[in-house]
Image (cartoon, rainbow, N blue to C red; front, side, top):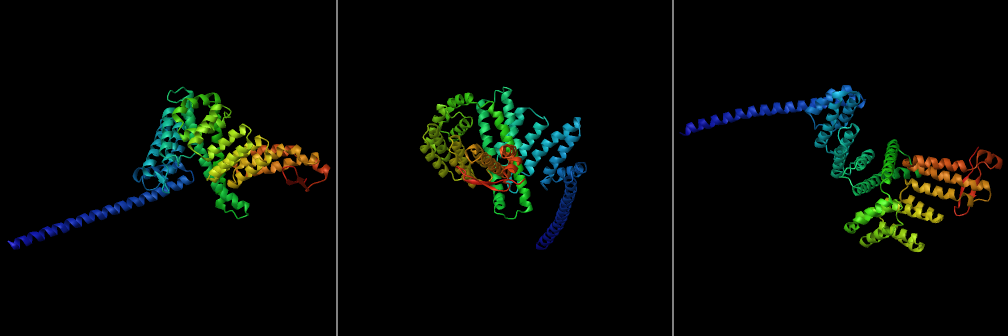
Length: 476
């Protein structure tokens, strides 16, 4: 009995070893096949990527589709290059073929979110989804409501990576167009709230760029060597800054038609009881009324005082200063302005407050104080070009009051032009307005004929009065 059991045990062991060998052969062959498949994917990926890099999208298409279908998670280049490949197909085809590629592009964005929702460990779902919405808009693939909902989904899921200035603008524009078409789901209140939300988003993106740009500007001012990479980055930051400035301006143009004082004041009054403890709502309402110059309305005072009662912040202190300014209490106003600056810890937000205060002083004719606060704004944010433009305008406005003779008075415009050029150097978004200002100031400065007549080419002219500066007469 024992002998038979041993024979049976040996039989089972041999059978197990045979099965194990078979299993190992299968596993080996499977791993070999997987390895081979991965190698094929990498090779095919390399082929289509090389074609795509040189914009030979026709040659890239077939190997790209092969990788997309068989190795969808191998590399994000499948989707970044795939977007370009499909857009090229849409551009160069027509009829049913074009429609097929349009739909496939939307499908690609969905696949992108599933397979590569992150880049360098950061979410890019907002970026991808807003690109899908933009494609739907560009290729007229859906109604405004559906397009808006995709934009809205992108913003709510991941507003951080939803930063493309054009996409942000069209996010609002689709809502605005629905409002103008009398869509009963889009109220004036919703429109204003979305405008405020996106304006803040633009400002945040602008601040991020300014921080990067200021590092390079500081190196330039110190005479340090700027690397080729920093030069490229500077151009990129300036281009992005310019785009933000352009689209934010377009956004403001749209809202100006609707957000008048006649519309805003009744709207805020209607919602006041419900929202009077909501700090964000109060802040946006005050900012919007001030921006639209509705601050003379008594309800503006109610909003500011209510906000200050809940939160003692840089914003509330600034607006209390503004109210004191309006009633002629200059000393009290200055006290609140200083409190506002002290309360703000973010130097870029502090720069914005300092510039606002500078503008207030300019309006009341206090030029020295206006320049002082503008310079303080620049010390916090060197790329704040509007501060240079403000100082330039202060100089230009004082031309007739500074100088012993007509030539010297007009020489002040050279100083104004030099200052405006600084705005042009540090802030690409001000290119048009700064260039126009420079041209205007130079046009009012002494001509070459005037310089020749005076015979003072290359001499230094001291500018007294409040300016306390000097300017060099240009060479002929």
